[in-house]
Length: 362
Image (tube, rainbow, N blue to C red; front, side):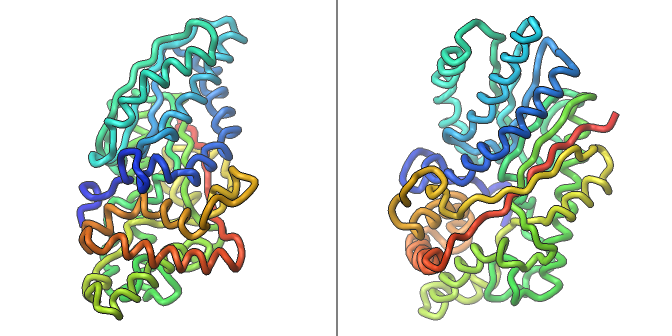
């Protein structure tokens, strides 16, 4: 599997699109807003630059894409008024892999700009937007060009399926039944990818610039902990059922592994220290329900299993289609929904989020 060519969130605005199934990601953006506001305030206070370059890495598409950009600009504009400082020009880079639905983003920019001007109430610096297709596991911006980098729910995706994970039979991610060499292979790939990511961003961020990143992760030091693996184990159960019924070939299942890694806080800290380009100013851990509608609505909306299955389908469907074929995907998620419904009936389950604030070393 060539991850950079296959991985993308479901595009458009349909029933299975990421745009309509990304409440979990929106909730996390709200949870991390105080830290993000603090970071952009501190950075801009120290630079008072006439132009401000912001990059959102793994931007995907839908309303979440521009939500963070809106918040950042509003913070800077309020600060400029307080300091009686002229508004900067804004250069906004929106990055994701080439398969991302950039067209949906571009079509929403005029509405975004109107909303921004309406909320600010006065004239402000111009905003320039660019889509930047490419993997953030490499250089994607000019040297010393970025002031502020944001990435949410993207860095846990790996650049490729780990080498040496081909004996992970019956599983699609790390689980309690995965051989030790598979667990080690996933962690090694995370180390390689995250270290390269930090090295590349250090070359692209200006002195005094900073970066805020949120991963899906885990609290436990055990990489096979249910808190990070169980949501994929349930999908593997659905796939294994289809193998037993002859719908999917066993060989197909045994050669499929999700290119993702949910790190622990200690693993994240270690890579930042080892790579050495950034100082970690803060690390926060937060939680959000698998069914994020529970956090937004007083009463649960519809079927818990359906909501979670739709969320996972929006991000995993392209990978599954590429490997198993489009004809079985609907059945996969129907079965997955049943497992999720049964699990949620026994109590609320949560994603663990790790958010870090990094400042570039001078």
